[in-house]
Image (tube, rainbow, N blue to C red; front, side):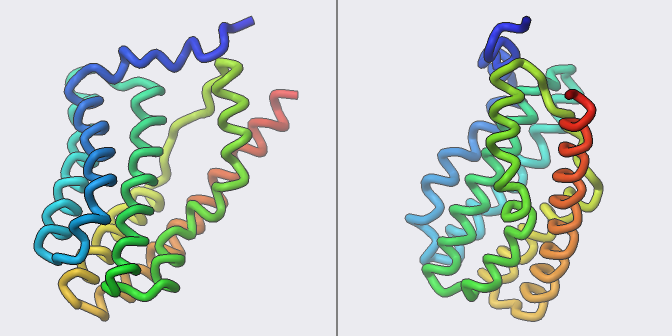
Length: 186
């Protein structure tokens, strides 16, 4: 039997890739306080996007890829994006319904949270193999947020619609994949 939480070793985050990932957490906290100013909001949004691009690249380059790093990266991405999304709605940079579309993947994945927690607690790490559709949805989510701050409405609407479709597809795919793995483990 595996020790609970043995795979969640915080030391795996103490490297350049982990620090790039963790930088997004204070950026997520700051974003609602600066979102009224489009220049500041754009700067923080682009800095967060840059750290998200670099953390995985640096981890692969330095050989510091870890399950914990991937797990934390995904959750910090969600925290940042949701904080940014609701802030953009609060400051009237985008309509509320558009922000709801941006998080289609997350709406689909919410029921999976207890399952993931249970697996991690048992030391049974779920596969962390993202789909290209999910990666594209993540990029388009940033495009939609940037477009909202720059008042590029057509770009905002088109990219948000694509995020919804690609994010929804990848969320359903992940849900089905995990259900199949769960069924096989019994």
